[in-house]
Length: 134
Image 1: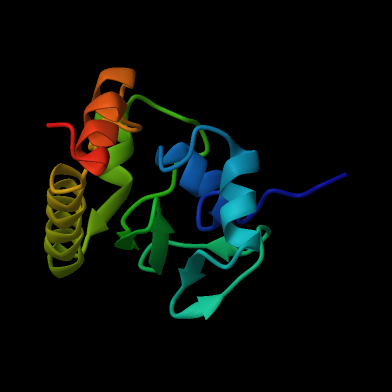
Image 2: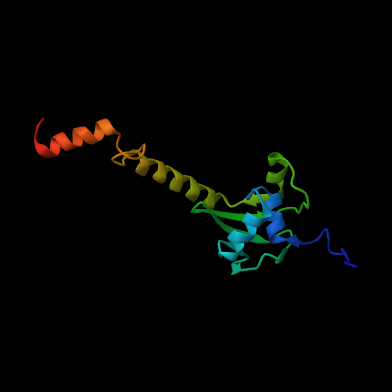
């Protein structure tokens, strides 16, 4: 029979990431950990790594950096406002992430076709320009 004497002082990393709402499922959290996108206290870890209050988690999610310090442990997935109380984010990393988001948006706007492929009408106009019929 399993003993849960350290139940409140530590928790599995994948379960904490899921409870803190960084991932929709524990399986997704496990996949990111296996791919090396999650580091605890500066070291690559396994899914089963137990974390405790005060640990620092470096996380790359959608190519954006997160640096989080664990403030509390919760073994249940709670609503988002409660989940935000489980961690504190490094402000410098948050600012860096916001800048990166703005850069991504700007690069999308300046793309030739921000909405995807050219429409049939666009293509016909391009063909006319190439032929010199305009």
